[in-house]
Amino acid sequence: MTGQRAAQLAERLAAVENRVGSACRAAGRPREQVTLVVVTKTFPASDVLALVRLGVRDVGENRDQDAAPKAAQVAAALAAAPGDGPLPRWHFVGQLQRNKAASVARYADVVHSVDRLRLVGALDRGADAAGRVLDALLQVDLDESGAAQGRGGAAPDELAALADAVACAPALRLRGLMAVAPLGADPLQAFDRLAGLAQRLRADHPQATWVSAGMSGDLEAAVACGATHLRVGSAVLGSRPLLQ
Ligand SMILES: *Cc1c(COP(=O)(O)O)cnc(C)c1O
Image 1 (tube, rainbow, N blue to C red):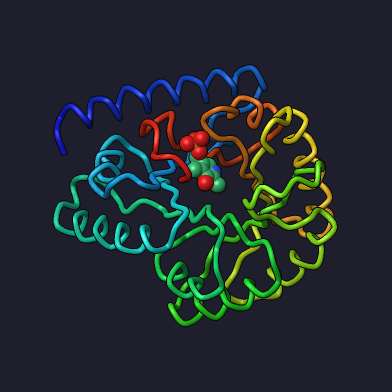
Image 2 (image 1 turned 180 degrees about the vertical axis):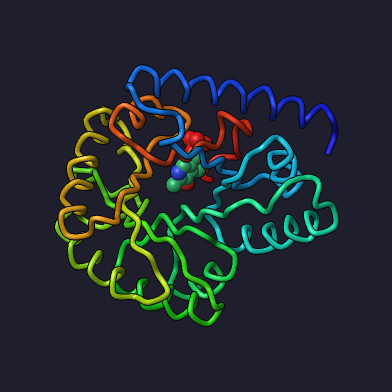
């Protein structure tokens, strides 16, 4: 980790924090209502450690193959240098295969991408085997155009059954909904629809108060629509190789 990279991350993080603060003020919402999850996918453990030193407490990953070793490296480094900061909370935000659920359950604190019933059992068994309880968000597909983007997500009419399944899983805590604004869609419109779905979910599951929405390009729209968790990658870490 060069000091130059740490300085660059500090500067970009401060710029994002300014955007989040302005968006909260514009929406009349307290800043504490919004958790910034810094998505570190494709970037090394050294960047995660630099972010922890800058006060970041929540990091996101989308591939178990990368996240599992990275989480272990970060835990080892922080055990050796506890003064650098506490262990971050790991948020799994990517499409999750059932055969990866047990691995993810060992290090993730929050899974944002529960989108089908078969995944619920696998995650619940994995968390139970690891002696942990995971926070779970249901990922909803907001694309009404019918153009599959391969990003996952349950159809809105599948949410009620999925929510009941998560709520009944002893090692999972149903926390709310997650979505990605569809490509080309107006993010305000998309996140407003998400807010409506979240409100409907809370009628049956009052504890499911989290709404994970908003990325580098559309975090202001997400805050305006009531998001409680923003997932911001490139605005803090820089651009990634394509297709990540
Ligand atoms: C990569 C990713 C993000 C972060 O995207 P940026 O545009 O880099 O901020 C957010 N959510 C999910 C699900 C992602 O895969």
